[in-house]
Length: 346
Image (cartoon, rainbow, N blue to C red):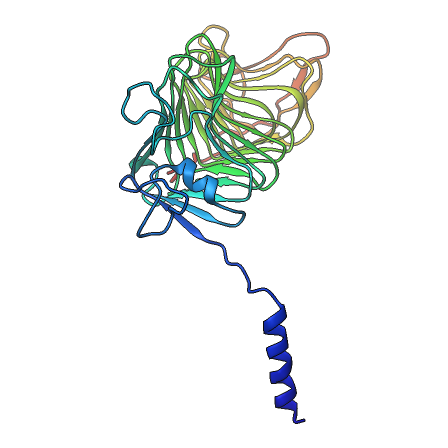
């Protein structure tokens, strides 16, 4: 048998025994769509993000058109009606990517019911929710919240939440705009608090917060892990670092926060670089830009303190050490800001 004939025979045998490859799919969601067991095609999109996510498998992308997506579209307080987002939240537990086609300014997800899900979006297992220029506006402001509630919860290495504008507020309850854990990434988001008890961005060890803006909260940023190029403005505390090692704190901006710009709580440790940050015009009462309450020595060199003369009296911010064992080294310092603000967040 000739060589080409042998190859043709092998190809025929292989074709009959090897399954055809599966390809990642795109599922579409539009305000004019209809939820069904087979929705998601471009010509027959789903109405709710939750339905498309439920139909998606690992590797798929959910493309969401402009408009409103809500747990109570018609405002009648009857939940889980056709086309509405699930009352228990949008749960993504496989590596699915969810993007808006027109960006955060044109695509809104909200919960307005008195029956609040603990998370409006709960993503894990390598899921990606939004990216720069393809995120969502998230409004999480129900009239009743569970004791710990959050607009977006992201968990696990490979999981990310990016490019979103988040408004969060629960009366009489602690609520997070974004909470990331176990290696997740929070990047290019803007988060604003709608109640004084809100915490805008929280991360834990191995997670990363990068190029986010937090405004108007109890804590702009809360937790540990890695913080790069974030801005905290007009919060009570700009950055509250606590509980576990802070692996990196670089090129962040803490400005015009009514209490400390940055507080390192008792028991926290800074194990990585703490430098090139701008700490300006915080705490009108004590003038403490950085409050070290950790009981440890913190190396905070090469930071800008609001004046070319380094930390001290106005117009600069001070370094305030409190508690036995707390000490901060701030010299040498920067004489001008080194951290440009994040750009193009949406």
